[in-house]
Length: 453
Image 1 (cartoon, rainbow, N blue to C red):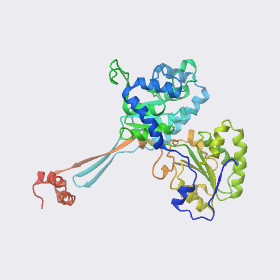
Image 2 (image 1 turned 90 degrees about the horizontal axis):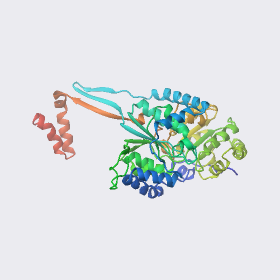
Image 3 (image 1 turned 45 degrees about the vertical axis):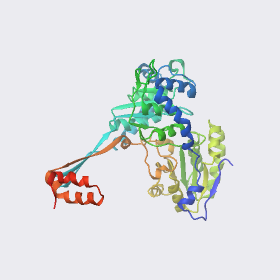
Image 4 (image 1 turned 30 degrees about the vertical axis):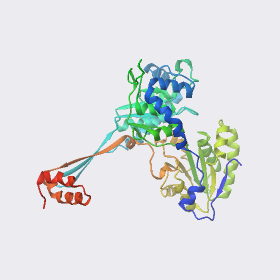
């Protein structure tokens, strides 16, 4: 059998028990922390030289220049396939349309006469955007990270992506030229040939050329530290984010990609199988899950999976992902039970291929993104829907959102009260300060008005 079955028919679908039986990839960040800690420490202490050494060690190529020169970025765009360029430009256009509507406006609230609270929405000063480049190359991730940061108004944006050992001579030691071209299209001129955990460390600590005395700040600055790091990556990138969180803000600790298809007997099994395979080709840990109340559909999807997985380009990767414990066909009693299972799983991507798919979609509470009907496959969202494809994984969609303009903004309350407005509430402040045994809080009020009756 290409994919395993989990039969939940006739069972009580309690949240705790569902967590134990639903398929999920093993993704042990704690174990990866021990591997990334010395990498991050090395970057912290040796700066640019450590980054070059680590590029040679992990990517098989030693970058001569960590920051990609402007002429290399321009050249990458000049030689980009015209069809790829047109596709990227259309993706950028659509993503901008959707994300423009996410920009928040400042609000002013008059709490009482003379008492005003303004909430201002300000972008972070500097962000580091990570674009993976290991098993596959993702210029679309450049778009998904850069566009919302630009719309948010972030003044300083840097991108890091692994150097590629198989690049042609003109791009030797730099990230994949399609990624460079996407950066050039978006006007990003600060791009680094740095991948993995070391890229996250570079963003967190900054990096300088090591001087004669070995001090990391003795030489020229290669990369200034950032305030926020976003973008997907492998388990070591996620572990570095966890390790350095606090020193930097992060979007999420992204795990392997996930697709869940909720389908009834009206679904086309060829569509379902094709969509499950589309995510399985990302990674051997990718999760592809069908939830259905139709045993006939399940059987027909399994047959289609066997045929299609054998014929697809990345057969070995797909086959391993589909056969893994993270993938499966989940049989349920009815659509109601299917909705319960989906909400418990909280998938990164959810396709709904049922009768009244829109109505079913409105009943889903936990998902990174929902794709409604037979003609909204996840592939559409990966590229050209206009939505963002940087989404919460590993069940985090029950409490977290995908990347958006809001990810790059901070809300700051500005409080302004007149003397009379403060006097009117002074006794409440003093009372609460006493209740919490914080008398100095109350004295900050009485110092202005004396004893308040």
